[in-house]
Every structure is written in structure tokens, then in C-alpha cells.
Image (cartoon, rainbow, N blue to C red; front, side, top):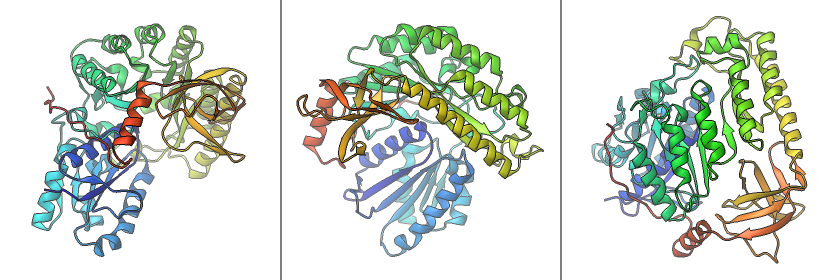
Amino acid sequence: MQAGRTYEVRTYGCQMNAHDSERISGVLEDAGYRQAVDGQAPDLVVFNTCAVRENADNRLYGNLGHLAPVKASTPGMQIAVGGCLAQKDRGEVIRRAPWVDVVFGTHNLGSLPALLERARIAEEAQVEILESLEVFPSTLPTRRESAYAAWVSISVGCNNTCTFCIVPALRGKEKDRRPGDILAEVEALVAEGVIEVTLLGQNVNAYGAEFGDRGAFADLLRACGRIEGLERVRFTSPHPRDFTDDVIAAMAETPNVMPQLHMPLQSGSDRILQAMRRSYRAERYLGIIERVRAAMPEAAITTDIIVGFPGETEEDFQGTLDVVRASRFASAFTFQYSPRPGTPAASMEDQVPKDVVQDRYDRLLALVEEIAWEEGKGFVGRPVEVLVAEGEGRKDDATARLSGRAADNRLVHVARDAELGEPRPGDLVVAEVTYAAPHHLVADRMVAVRRTRAGDAWEARTAVAPVDDRVVLPMPTVPVS
């Protein structure tokens, strides 16, 4: 019905949103759409939105404003808004941008083609926001952007009540997929050439709580280790409250689980953590870091930190700096607190002045980068294994380097070596690190190249069809139990 119509999906926010966008693309292509090529004006633009930060609203409505005259001069063009901000704003999107055709929520990605057709026939906007999940996103068709790496959702929603976070209100209570369904998806991906998967959830290490198995996440990691051909397993994001020693043991004892942990801190002040309802304290957090490093000395640990939460004093902020110094993070996502309507923190007293927040943010960022640089320098002169990523790498002194991720997820820019041949995206190279920066490593000497099934899959995909015409991989729709 929609054969020949082109689309573009613009994604904001977290990896869960990126995973959802692959499903949105898959659903659209299953309905006959095809992805617009670069420079082509699409017939459909889909915004998959985030609602975590205040500037997410500004970005969406600003972009919608820029598209209004384009749509007015393009007969048949449609605009759809989905994701967390759509779930939050609902009818507000149409009120502020009446040229939008469809607004859909986080729980009904699969409804998009039908909603677009209804909007076209009725010549009026369609808004459909479901309050609970009907099917897991991973059971919908997908158009994966990568031939060699994939996200796999193990749960959706969140049972936590952090006072700064609106996600539980938008994505609902935690729903866990059955281990057999997850492993079947991973095995199918590996059969297609994927060698790296990232297990996704709002709180992955709470996985299993819904069906009463507290050890389910550790068991899942070990089960992934038994899948032949799966070379790298990652996960994000865990919660310190639920992070247990059996997960640490599973990480350390399962060779294909990468020595990397992203564990949000948010604050190093016990008083602020309590106000955030984070249900752990700085001592417990540091204890987890210590046990992870005892089991995996090479593990790279990254985190999220919020500066300027209501009531934060200079003493509280110094507590955060103390934990950062003790934790030696490889990197950190740092945020200035912004109130989100509907969260308890938005109405708290003692909101911190913006100039104070900015000053603390600048000091935190400087410390994080200083530590990350020091940690990176420890790799100079050492070999690292890098999974080559798609796209042109860093250009330095007229030398185009390949880019990819080391086992611990550090970004590495690798100089080419004509004698070793040109690695393909999905291949693995070993290279010696020659320089470290706060956010990446540079390796000027490639030592070895290993051609992989993933590289074969990338080569087959690009040989069979243009880069903009990926294969859609249908999966059966399984209701949420």
C-alpha cells in the first residue's frame, strides 16, 4: 500500500530509543516504505523522542518548526512523533505543531503504519498512546543499522521511583522477557553474522524479578557465553541496588562478556542519593567498584552523574568529586539537573541556581576528563583488540584511520596497514596504542587482522544492495504475558 514512499527516522536519547528506532524502521519497511537516501526529501519523517532532559522538548519543537514549511510545499508528506516525549505530551504535540500527522507512544510502535494510513484517509491527525505494553519491541520486524552488532531487549519499563526520572511513568512497570525468547533472538542474530550483542533494559540486573528468579541475569550472561560464534556481550544499564556478586562472577567467568561496566552513580552524597530515592549509598557503590576490579582488573567502568539536584550543597558536590576520584571512571556522562514536570524533584524546594550548577558541572567535567586521560595513558605501548566499526574513521595529519571499540568499549582510532590488508566493518584488528586522549585512544601500528563472519555479513549486505536498503528481518509477534 505504501510501496515507493520513503521515510527517515530521527532518534534522540538512549540506546533503548535507538533499538526502538530500528523496530520502527522495520515496521515501516514491512509495510512497503523504504529508507530515504542522503539528500533526498523523505515522504515521511518520524521523530523518536526522549523526555529525560528539558532540552529534548526544545529540540523536538524546534525541528518540527523547521519542517512545517517543507511539509507545506511537499504534497503528501507526513510527520510522526513517537517515543517518551510523545508519551508524555500526548495531545500537546498536536496543539503546538498542528501539522504533525501522527503521535504514538512507547507501547505501540507497531501501530505506526496503520495510524499513518488513517491520518491520510481522514485528513486529520491521529493520536494513539497506549498505557501498557502489548508486545515487546524485539518481537517486531527490524531494520538493523549494523551487520555485526545488535541490541537485544531483555526487559522494558522500570520499577524504581527515582525522584528525578520520568521514565517509569512513560515506559511503565518492568516487564521481563523469558530467557528462552532472548537466547533464541541472540542465536538468530549470530546466525546472520552478528558477533556482538548488547542486552538492554532500564535496569538490566533486576531482570527476573517479574517471574521470581533473582539469579536470572547472571544465568543469562552465562548462557550467552555458551552461544557459539558470539564474541562480545555487553549490557546496559544496571542499578547499584540490584548489582550482586553473582553478576560479577558471571562477568568474570564468561569469556565473551566484555570487561566493561556502565553503572550510574548520579551523586556521591548520601543525603542527595536519599533525596533521589536511589536506595544505595556511596559506600555500597564504591564496594561494588572494588569487587568488580578485584574480579576483572582490566574492567573499564563508566557512569552517569547529575549535578545541581535540588538541595545540593557544596559539601554534597565535594562528596561526588570524592567518589569520582576513588572510582577512576574511564568516562562519565555528566548532566546538569533540569526539572521534569511530573517528577517529585520538580517541586522540591532549594532548587540550585543555574550559575552554581554550571560552575560545579565545569569542575566535575574537568576532573572526569583528567582521570579518563590518566587511565587512557596506561594503554600506551600495549596491544588492544578492536572491532572495526562502519563509517570513515578519524582523519589525522592527512591519514584516515579506522575506528572501533576495544573490548572494554574504549574508542580506538587505528592506522591502516597496506601489508595486512583493509579490515572490513565487523572484522577484528589488534593494534598497538601510541597515544591516549580523554575520550579515545590512537593506535598507529596495526599488528594483526582477523576476518570474521561479521565482516562477511557486512560485505554481503553492501554487495547485494545499496547501504540505504537494508534487509528487514521479520519476527513473530509475541504478546506480553
